[in-house]
Length: 241
Ligand code: ZN
Image (tube, rainbow, N blue to C red; front, side, top):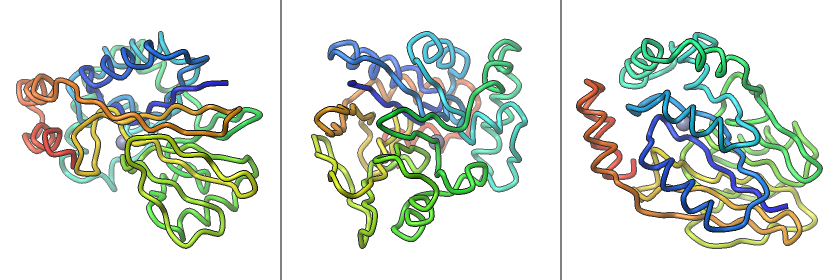
């Protein structure tokens, strides 16, 4: 199976369209979305429609949950909270219902997928260091768990000392130890690289390819400003933070 794994689109239609265009150029069996389709960006409904029609599985992210009132925005910073309420006011009834129906996890014979961490899933832990990764490893037995949420592509190995940041390119997953792989963010990368990020997993070869590509950041950023969303959400796209 060859599976494209996208995550953290955050209402950025320009980045999503570009990612799907790249995915259409390679032969994949499925497209899987790890959640946070909305929040921050100016095109929440359009992104939901695209993801819904193109992905075989879409998981619930914390920003999706916040936008439909399934999780509290208490721990969100001011910008994220404003964006969540902005999104909530604009989602169509149909898309609100759709988001509310999304699952927290997806399991196949080859892997597990969640938005944040398989440990206390609805607490939305950030798997950004080995300690938090170890908590996550304790919760699953699958050979690999794909995650999003931190917007930084990284690999954690079971029993490892620390995470290994992933740059563009292909890695082969270890055979005897389990892995946690963050495929990065399509719509709001935060590793100082403004290019969109997603992963392609080949279950037979046990490889993960991180794809990075430029998209029309200026257009996505301009829409955020025009929508009256916080200016910082527009500028950060240019910086990849
Ligand atoms: Zn996110």
